[in-house]
Image (cartoon, rainbow, N blue to C red):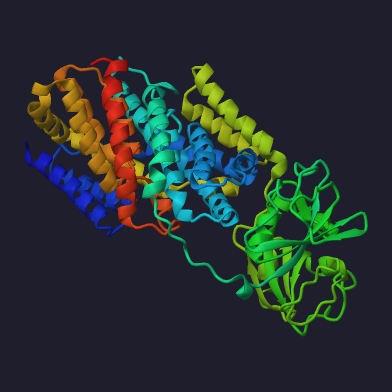
Amino acid sequence: MTWEAWFTLGTVLLIAVTLVRGLAGPDTVLLAGLALLMTMGLFSPMFPSPAQAVAGFGNEAVITIAVLFVVAEGLSQTGAMGMVTQPLLGRPGSVTGALMRLTLPVAGLSAFLNNTPIVAMFMPVVNDWCKKIGLAPSKLFIPLSYAAILGGSCTLIGTATNVFVDGQVIQAQKAGQLTDIHIGMFTISAIGVPSLVLGLIYLLTVAPRLLPDRRTPVEADSDARQYTVEMIVEPKSPIHGKTIEEAGLRSLPGAYLIEVERQGERIAAVGPQQVLHEGDRLIFAGIVDSVVDLQRTRGLAPATKQVFKLGDPRPDRRLVEAVVSDNCPIVGKTIREGRFRTVYSAAVIAVHRGGEHLGQQKIGDIVLKAGDTLLLETHPRFVEAQRNSRDFFLVSTIEGSKPIRHDRAWVALLLLIAMVAAVMLTPMRLVNAALLAGGLMVVTGCCSSGEARQSINWRVLLTMGAALGVGATLESTHAAQSVAESIVQVFQGFGPRAVLLALYLIGMALTSLIGPIGTVGLLFPVAKAAAMTQGLSFMPFAMMLMTTSAASFATPTAYQTNLMVYSAGGYKFTDYVRVGLPLNLIVMAVTVALAPWFWPF
């Protein structure tokens, strides 16, 4: 090999070691490696020019994934995910039952929506669900990640890695290579579905015995600030006619239902079989997080009419905590008499006063006292306006308290269905369909333009673009070809399936060290060179790249969703090795056995 090839391989090794030691994030490390290789282009024409090195940031796959984050944001902001999944979760009686209720919908959704946002949206749902059913989160969070990965491996759009591989193929075809292959929406399903079925069987039968029962410590409820809050069952609410238990309002984490008021009559000591009706006023006592959850529950709304008289659109509002000072002009008056909404452009939805429960009074009838903590629904500008006001001691915004646009849930779901149908039934490419769906999410009010921008995970995109640049250097310096020829020389005597297996094992090791995006960027040119050197079809190798890089479970760094649930489940590194390595081997066996059968060499 030339010195340029050795330098490139040395840089790749340095990238891998840096990531393994956790000295910096993958985006930082790969960008630094790309900068080093670009600088070396000053001394040798074998290195890509600056324009060629950064061309990956404009790759079709990178753009597609960016827009898919916007589509996921629209589904999240409308509560479409919860509308579909919450009825499926229920109250299982065992770990296996909980895993079955969780993994099946997660895998199904991940097949048609990028699995990273799926896990992000399910994590708070699973955390609250564990509190309700009394399970340790460590029993469910790793399976949540694994089910999302397995489901995402069933379609082209299920995981960023599949889209990335397809983008690499398209780039090669523009250069006149790999012109005989085509990867469609369900091409990978021939391998992904059998892997999913075997993987789910493993998660439901073997994994529960391997998963730790590790519970994270929580604060005692007695030390938390308790609010009294009134909610009303909206007209045509999906919980109308359901019992308290069926509506998911029993055993709420951090909250309990004090009583129900119906047509002026109070129903105290509410039992789980009490049926709810439109117009019922539900009085809860709970911590602020539980109040936020109630605010986001489909079919419930704050009982105070003042919320609906605020001038700002509800999706633009937030929940804010404010402590009443002794200088506040409405101390000693009821909230209604003090015309709180008119004076402060904010609606009081809950009040905390020491250890008292104020459930016997409607919000408007509560007489304010100095030291009362108010939970307000208002515009974020209230915080800036009142932060230094003498009327309040402390003002702060509650994170994650933005109201859900439940009225747009079906719109978001229809846009997702339309995007998938356009890719399946028309010649439209995924990037085009995703751009249309993402744009319509904003136009139809499923999410705002600001939320769309904030939803994009720029670290993922930077990692992808930098990995493409490093991969281009591996190819231009002939380092990839040299590595491929070495692999072929060692394994060619055993046949092309042995070469496929060797590349799969290398990909599995790389993914465990540097993650899936970096693995594809580095291994794609090696696999392409291996196929072209022997005159083999690239299709089995393309399918291998999709599975070895995405379906990797043995370390928390192997895939972004594994890392996301690492702290939430209270896991150790060895938990992933113990539970994930057998799953790695299952997917490897399926891929090596079926890929050459469906797409002969």
